[in-house]
Image (cartoon, rainbow, N blue to C red):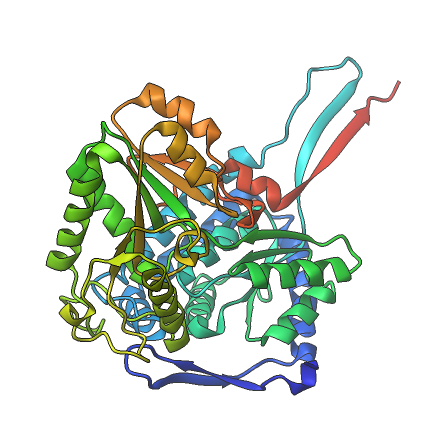
Length: 471
């Protein structure tokens, strides 16, 4: 479809009640190019400022956003359906990641000094890239934005934020915070673009690096556009996931059930690193299934997310819920057993974004629900007889974001972890991002790294200083 045939306006349809929560026009490509030009001008001065000065501005931005938590939480719930009891938690995660990356910036960006050589001053500097285009996802709109936003600024770059259209108001709040923090004019800007415009903007070379969080389909489109820019444009891609959990025979069963269920159901299962498939040692299998089903039935309430006692809200859109229902129905038709009666969740309705949680057994890797990303409140469970079988099943997937193992044996864990094809390996934990560790994936989950000291390497380039003293 031609760019000029794309829509010129968009609406945010709230999954909470189907209302039009916000409506606005897309920017034109001419406007976007002007934003890029302003960002380049601002970045030249910003790159000359000390890391300590950049930290003051970035810390002020974080403070300003946190001061607006009530409005942020309400808007978040209405834009993507997360219960209001949970929405403020995203601000805690935002603060944790932002402040950590600010705190480690000076050390992470310090020059690398090789072995001294008489008559020479030699070092490897970390130089900013220029303009970073941040393309975050709607499911954790502030967390997927901050992964690039704060470290890119701290590294001396300008940032252009093009948020997912479903959560465009989150970009507004970040822009508000940047103004309150008095960031230099043009250094941080936001754009509203449709899909074709976004690809064209990337293709134009208006940025020097792209950080994208989203679907595999979207990631391929961004990578293709970057290649067509003919500027060797770098991209970081955090894409899909089908994250597994393995419950060993020595696991603390109650602890594993509680945390794995939460990892599967939080945010209505709409988490890149949420648990979607579980492999349980045969000795614990029956009790695990029984416990997981009982826990879901006893503590989860699917309802209007504006109510204080709701802990599972609607999925982001009707079509997203329809896709998950189709996966469940196909699995059951192929022989899977569904353990949750949707009628126990009165808000669940065909054609609605409100979808009851589900636990499936008698599943196989011939079923889509066990091999393709579900991105919904569904957990497939299979029994295994050994570590070797569990590892084989966990790796039998085209995605590789995280994998978790539930065990009391740290030594065994150290032998299992290297065999797992994933960016992060958890022990007795899941569905969490530690900013002190590299956030990365393998296979179709994408490539590149955000956060930690390693994340700064992606947002800078090495420049070697080879100075010979005058004779």
